[in-house]
Image (cartoon, rainbow over all chains, first blue to last red; front, side):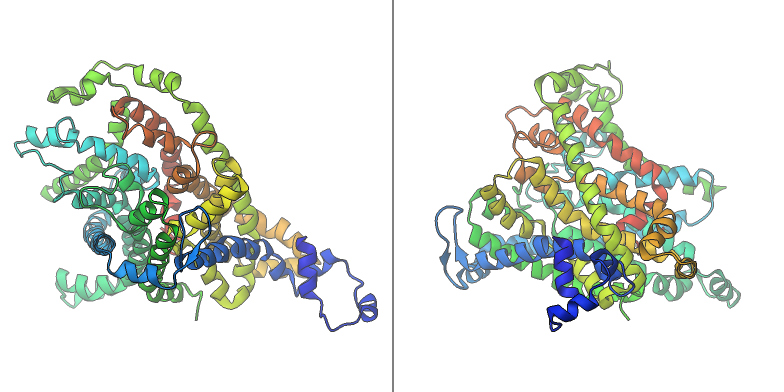
Amino acid sequence: MNANRARETLIDPTLSDQALAVVRKPSVWEILTSEKYFKWTLLIPLLLLLLVFMLYPLFYCIYYSFHEWGMQGDALFIGLKNYRQMLHDGSFMEALARTLEVLVICIVAELAIGLGLALLWNREFKGQNIVRGLALLPLLVAPLVLSLLWNFMLEYDFGAVNQILTAVGLGKVYWWSPQFALFTICLITIWQWLPFSIFVLLAGLRSLPRDVFEAAKVDGASGWYTFRRLTLPMLSPLIMIIVVLRTMWLIRLFDPLYGTTRGGVGTELLDWIVYRTAFVYFDVGYGSAMAIFSLFLTIALCAVMFRLLMKSLGVIK
Amino acid sequence: MMKRALFWAATLIVLAIVIGPLLWIYLTAFKASGDIFTTELKKLIVFAPTLDNFQRLMTDYPYWFNLGNTAIVSVVSTIFVMLVSLPAAYSFARWNTGGGHLLFVTISTRMFPGVVAALPFFIIFRTLGLLDTHVGLILLYIYFNTSFATFLLYGFFRDVPAELEQAAMIDGYGRMEIFRKVVFPLILPGLAVTTVFCLIWSWNEFFYAFLFTRLTARTVNVLISSFWGSIEVQYGPMAAGAGIAILPTLVAAWLMQRYIIRGLTFGAVKG
């Protein structure tokens, strides 16, 4: 089927059958692997996949966002009502504000602590490979498992963290109270993703040109001055990468909520409220509208930064 | 001397914070219920180890069956992802097909919030009877891993010098032969890294698995999540189950140290 499809687009439709009979000596396979078309042949599976898995859901989500539908019966067209409802929906606006809050807290903390530790480890020391290997471990562990683990460790009475805090003379903390819960979610996320910032920045520090820093030293520049005027600007592409990727991931925070508060005690974030609306209340139309909003928010937040990223990679001129 | 002591103190504290919680999973897995729910400080570390939790996990729950589901779905979806991404990445890397814009479109699917795809697919899967099936979940995992794999492989393909291919062409190799005999062997390490990453993302995935599976295709993460939220929280079996389930990812993380940052940044940072 692929081959047929490809052939239709490859051969000039204005050629008559007769002309084709003369022209079409090479087999389909030869055309597909010919110098001219090989690069597109290679892309056929991907293009089909994108068509089915990207355009289809996007189209349907937009379609449903203009309808009212409870997964039963016919969808009722209601125009922009879902979107208008969103603007007046207090819990949605709160979820949105909270998501942005989490975004800022996590990214700032990860960058600040990450930079500190990257500077600390930016030297040759004994056992550096072991330290590196151990520190990277949390990154690839399932976020859901980690959220369950932290939920247990931060339990008020039996949780290991509170017991240790008591032992060293600090009081217990009610981690899952409404005032603290969102902050606790941030802590868990930062804990898992801190190694990411550390080692991206460390890779950056390792690649900085030595001579510039030696010259600065000869000129008598202070450590702080060198850091601000040389190190930070040279690290900025890497900081950008961290900010873009973390924004993408943090907007869709779901697993850490499922294992802990399940959206309760003031921790409902964007993805959770969409999930609740669509899959718990079966309000498909409204859920779709929220999902589309969340998509555009992601694109708006990332698009500009993303193009900068692609430019620094040399993908786009 | 003072400086060195400070350096190691800071390093060890950081490592303790990073590793402590992971060790905690394994400590809890070997504790009896009485040692888990206690406020006695020394029992955090000192306790009589028991295999009760593992036993309960195997007898009371379909643990191996669910772990098997996770393995099947991860492996099959990863094979398909590779079949799609490998040629596509080669095309992007060697000919810059689509002038970078097509690559951008591909990678932007990774920006989609999970729910945007979840809703339409939930509805169509319901009609097609694909809910709670391996095929359904495999399709979803192909969707969310392809853009990632394409982009990562793209970076590895770019490391292969084009001159090699030109030389092969002068020797009279066809396009397919060049790919098979020249490019493919050189890309193998990159292919291995990408494969492991796709396996791990599928292995760890929870959102789709939670929405789209109930019994027959339930993955191990969904099973583990069900221990929390029932009337009695089953921390023991939960820790035992989690300890086994995360073992492959821990091993992979240790073996792939050099490539983790490269993978997580879609190849942007060589690490």
